[in-house]
Amino acid sequence: MSFEPILTKYRHEKDSHTIDFYRGHGGYEQAKKAIHDWAPDDLIEEVKKSNLRGRGGAGFPTGVKWSFVPKQTDKPKYLAVNADESEPGTFKDRVIMETDPHLLLEGIMISCWAVGINTAYIYIRGEMVHGYNQLVSACKEAYAAGFLGKGIFGSDFELDVTVHRGAGAYICGEETGMLTSLEGERGQPKLKPPFPAIEGLFGCPTVVNNVETLANLPFILEKGADHFRSIGPEKSPGPKLFCVSGHVEKPGTYELPMGVNLLTLINEHCGGVWKGRKLKAVIPGGSSAHVLHADECDVNMDIESLAAGGSMLGSAGVIVMDETTDMVDALLNIMKFYHHESCGQCTPCREGTGWLEKIVHRLHQGRGRKEDLDVVFDVCDRMIGKTICVLADAAAFPAMSFIDKFRDEFLAKCTNSDRSTAQATSGAGGVNV
Ligand SMILES: Cc1cc2nc3c(=O)[nH]c(=O)nc-3n(C[C@H](O)[C@H](O)[C@H](O)COP(=O)(O)O)c2cc1C
Ligand code: SF4
Image (tube, rainbow, N blue to C red; front, top):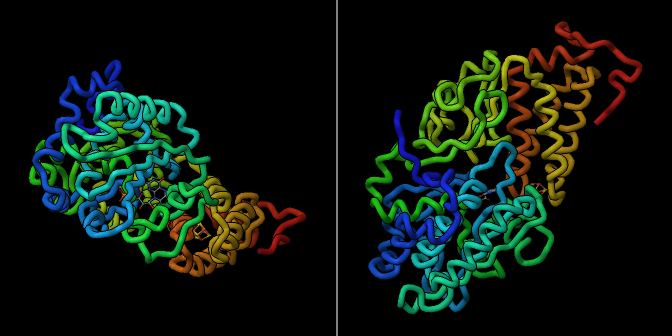
């Protein structure tokens, strides 16, 4: 299937990050068109019609989210661009920010015009220094060209954009955690409702959108909602960036139509499983997603198909594992991450992520008991749906699916299992959670 990239078309071209390059390839024409020709409400309807769904992980329809922001309000409205990109296995937004930052700025202009916003913040993960520098210089160029600031394109529309660096906490990617961090507080999620569209940054109506989501807007305006909807499956259409890491010959960020088959992505685009080995498992949507057994990988990479296949598209961070992968080791790595990143506000998450790490660690050392596998499910059951944000669920999903689908490997690490290969040690069974 041949597909002409849209969001990453110029990523390998020299100076693609500069305003001259961007304008030389039609850049900022769609923002100009939006401000001159589109009434904000009509623009929101067009984005709704396009079926664009958020690329940050939850897949919420973008136009619908915008329509929740009150039209009549005395408060300022904000756009908070989620550029935290912290989900393990995810490296797509950085490609846009590093190689085509003006595409993001144009998307920001279009969304702010549609929703009536004059102030936007880009919250970028602190470690992404190159992306930060590219964004800051793109903003300077856009201000100098009169595309940001007052009187944009001869209208009375004004827009200010500030780039803000986070300190590198996964939880600051969760939208309310990000807003609290932007306010200068410790980045901790808040209970919803109220949702940010009603009460977000500084208590004011706020749209939170992912970088890739916003980068789609110039294309939607250029070609129209119907054309956008014709790419990929109707319910979650459009171009999509897939981040492929792990045991493939050619890892990287691939732009393809939403709904590309996972095996096609791995075998045709990424050169197949590396070293001629067999596929064992794939995490299709960042580490929070349920792992897929190799037998389940003939699935399309879109929101509905992956949900039907028992996992999720999430951030489209595709982590490929070959036949030599130790699944207990892989899960331990993931559990350490969630335990470390829990913000600690909710007991089921703070304690649960710690317990999961301890149990998997014990199994990893060959000191586990087969009852531990049931305890993992019990702990997960007490985490899912019981906390302020879904980090707890994000930790529970991989724990349950790894054990469910690769149970024999976990049993083989238990001291009291028929399948056990583990040698009892003096400390066997001695650690309680
Ligand atoms: C623990 C956690 C981490 C998240 N990290 C990110 C992130 O790094 N980037 C992102 O865009 N969304 C992230 N999200 C999703 C955001 O909360 C939010 O749904 C998204 O930014 C909305 O934008 P969208 O509608 O354009 O996808 C995260 C959610 C959770 C629960
Ligand atoms: S679920 Fe975890 S990360 Fe989310 S608010 Fe509660 S303690 Fe913090």
